[in-house]
Image (cartoon, rainbow, N blue to C red; front, side, top):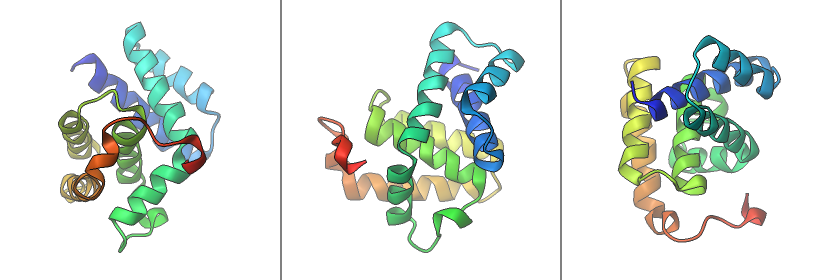
Length: 147
């Protein structure tokens, strides 16, 4: 498994734990790194994903809600919700990952960790987001006051 995918898996596992238990994010990440060591670039990427998602969670959830209006964010499966948060963070805020790669990685995580319907759901939400907001994924990131 490639380093960035391993980092996404680590970030997803950490966010799942944080979302379900409200454990300290730094402690959770440290435990994940001890259980599955990553090269420095991978651990930095995972850390960026976790703390970026936590910092922008309200904005990310707003985008999820807007693109999956029939599903209240709290009712989306925890794993699917966090896969979407990671992907949308990469697409809308971090912007260091190409669009197709971020979507493909999210769908692959959904296949690995989600239910049978997760890949289609994740792909559908991200597809709706991209088709609706494609212009916003180019250029500068959103202003801090919008987040």
